[in-house]
Image (cartoon, rainbow, N blue to C red; front, side, top):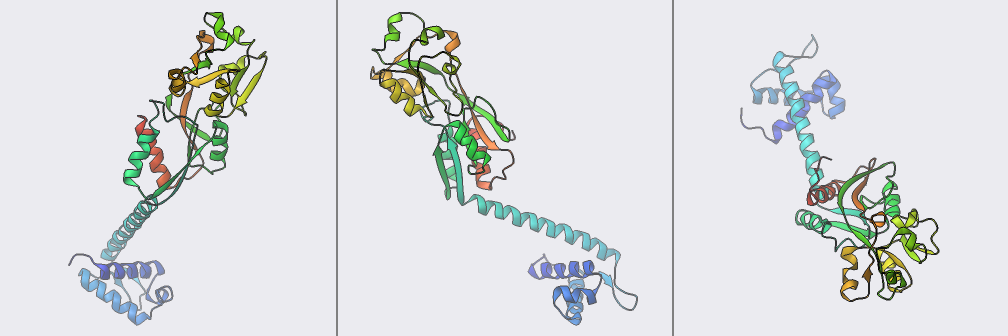
Length: 304
């Protein structure tokens, strides 16, 4: 037999339709062909294969032993063709489209954060995919993930929410900061949680405050923000003390606009960050590829 070609594919499809219908007569309605045409094409297939595939006549329609084997082999062939078509569709889908990802703010200067690397590697392979990034606090990112408005998020939660999957990727060291003229520095020693009670503080998290300052219940005055930028403004006002990531505060330390406050162990703060996805959401091929790229960039098993 010659190598299989389009004609053979079409004839094998016809053969499967005949076999599944139980004969030429029944198949003519499904194939929208005259019985004589079906019989002719069936004969052509038998000639091309060099074997008899079925018995037809007064005794009814029956597959021969060879016909049964060809039937099963043809089934497998078209299953493989369908798999091939699905994979091609996946490649097509991953080559274009839109991805929505939510990020907590001011991660770019964190040396442990490799989101940029992940995006770079992803874009080298899928340059036509649009990556739409949104900067929100963790609570808002989680809400958008649960509503299937985001494909993935980078969050720093205190409490894991049901329905979301959290994959640890990195952390960051945060310290308490104030301006050089702030009166808390006049203590001249390591600051304790009790010392802080006398001073206004700025804490992050409207849905649920996230820093150790939240556990100081008798605070004289507390301001709340949703992001690092707002926290920095409050600290730079000279009125508040608050937590900032060490990498983010560095620029104001160099400009002598801020001072790191020496603190006791109870006030130490080192939050974790997680790649977060909706456990029930069926991600697009492109979104799955970006999630894998983020995992790989942070040394996480892509099967996790």
